Amino acid sequence: MKRYRIVQGSAYNGCFPITVWWVQVRKDGFFSDKWVNVKGFDTYQRALDLYNLLQ
Image (cartoon, rainbow, N blue to C red; front, side, top):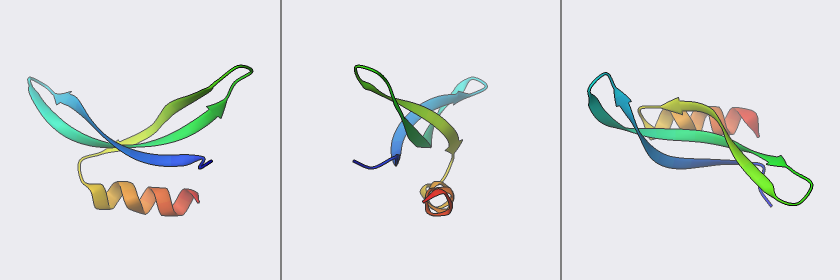
């Protein structure tokens, strides 16, 4: 199973909703796994650069 992933989400920039690409890491738990946000970016390319750096 992969340790990192990129997911699309939404967030607010002041009053306006924007699309955010989240780089997430999987934290292993005793009974289940949990995905935690590492960093959010406004473009997919910037998220992909961090994803490639972490792997």
